[in-house]
Image 1 (cartoon, one colour):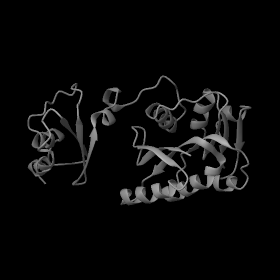
Image 2: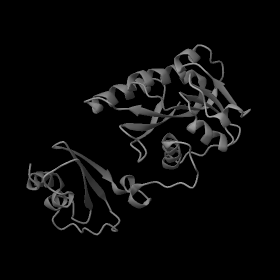
Image 3: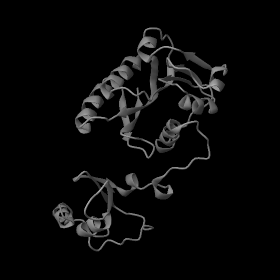
Image 4: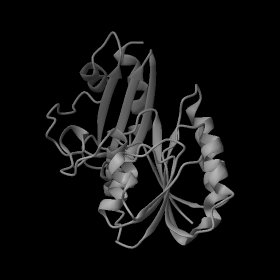
Amino acid sequence: GKPSDFTRFRQHAHEISQDDYIVQTRIAGDYTYSATAVTQSIQPGQSLNTSRVPQGRVLSILIAEQTAYMGISWAAQNVSPFTGGEMTFDEPVPNRAGHKLLEALATFKIRLFPGLRALDLGAAPGAWTEILRRRGVWVTAVAPREMYDWLQVDPFIQAVPVTAEEYLHQCDTTYDLLLNDMIVAAQDSARLMTAYAPHLRPGGIALMTLKLRMHDPRRLMDHTLRILRKAYTIVAVRQLVSNRKEVTLYLRR
């Protein structure tokens, strides 16, 4: 529709002062009107100064294929401390998957200590395993594909060349950390994580990505989280800058 169509959402914000919320609009693909036009139709008085730090609440809008997706959050949960929302790290990574783990550790404020034991499911080619090893973590890397050459000679990495499903029946170790960035259906990944929960110490943490490649991601998310709650406390769910059609979950047993 027209930008003026969005003004109906102001009815839900009539008790909020103009200084207590800010609108952020993003447009994916072609759309008749600009993001600025949409923003101004909802909050005509909003400053377009991008250096302004939002206070109070943020109304986020994404317009894609003639559909508008909207969400409300507190500014403290929404605003990135990194310029343009892009996280930058001095630490090199061998592929994009590595950025997902670095960003997750920073976002969830997770500190890893030497001597911890981690189980990395679907580890190949090894970006997450490498990041763990730099922090002194002992890693069991499970994947039917080969790891990077330099990881294959690391004495503190146990490479297990089988699938995560196959290793479940062999696993006899209790871990401090469980990781899963496998490209599998979200429900299947959640069931596998639940099956591995007895191999994670009480209070141990898990990081996983959920692939949301279907027409109804909300329904998929609801179903998947119900599965995970059988074994974990879901500490946080975030779509990180480094995620692509997926979200990152922070779990605790």
